[in-house]
Length: 361
Image 1 (cartoon, rainbow, N blue to C red):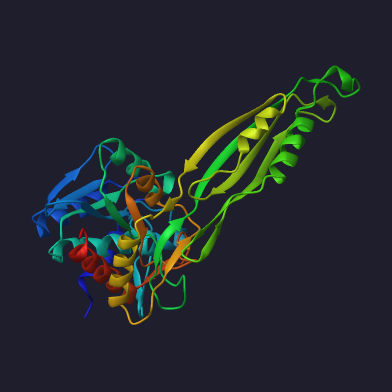
Image 2: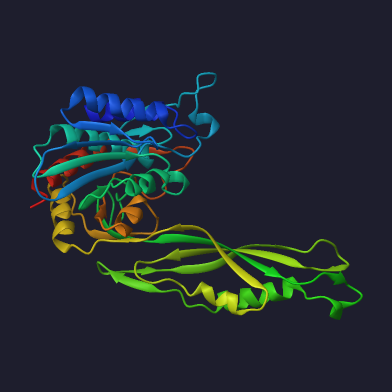
């Protein structure tokens, strides 16, 4: 028999949501209105937020219903819908792992649980393009005390186990502009070579020691790397401008000192994207989620870290204590054959239900 979580996942995955999340949001909103007695709202960005229960601190089950663009085999020609296919214990389709499966698991848990306090369900838009929905919700006052974000945490500590992520990296992307003065290449001293200034930037960046952090017995290591360079207009012209891009993976609490590049004459540093890292500082909450995950599976889950930024970073930066727990496995998200385990979908829904029964204390 196919479970309700699987059917919900199938329905959600089939709905296109890589350019416009409206239809997927409509489905989630209408299901919650029909199946629960919650107060269901849709904000100006398109986020679906529902609340039930009362008293004390607030726990949120958080996901997102946007996806990255599907590969051609993941779309049904002439209909716009996405292909969804079950093969054995796995469901295949764009968004099955990242992360409509987790949204479906949270929807069922949200409906079925008798919550210990105020329970919130939130499915955001725009996670794949920088956390647009989460940032909008936070700006509008979305501020749960605690959150379980349903991004991937399965098979991190070992096979067939869904772990609990207590910290993850962020990402800061920068453009560094080196400016000089153009001149004919036969009169080198008449100009200021922007490429030479850019090479000074490269040397400085290569010498930066990225920060690292010990969490849950693991070391989260930051990184900083020059990823692109472009400059010059012609073979016989001293270049007046050269641009670099830098990818930096950040860790909670500390950043690489990239501002040092502006100590070089003619250099400007521009931050293009800054996705914050996350760390859970409430051990009791993390242990409660770990106990719930342990009770929902035969394997032995662990507290782990994650290399990827998620909406938990935005929530954590706004003051919410977060963990990440969800069905997606390493290597599944954004792939041409993206899939999720049916067994793990059920496992995650049961985990969310157990957490909501016990937390807030």
